[in-house]
Length: 123
Image (cartoon, rainbow, N blue to C red):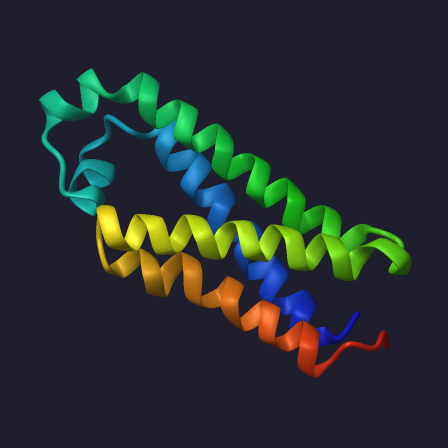
């Protein structure tokens, strides 16, 4: 797969692993509360929901990593599927939670989808 696509997939893998960490293991920490703009009370009340959301982010990270490591005959399809899932999640989050999500989550995935079409061959 082209280096640009692999780099974007790696970025998305790391991002979603970080989201998993924040939501599953650090949700009630002061730094996470500040990053998400939530109160300690809300963090405590919503930690089970956040952990569930973190698990889903872990699945997205796993899918991106799978796309990197998959045999050539599967990697493009996996890249397109998981990138599209992340674009949809990022758009929804950007519209319902914070516009920052559009840039942090959806934009790298959209760039990855574009890169797959610009650089369709394998190196």
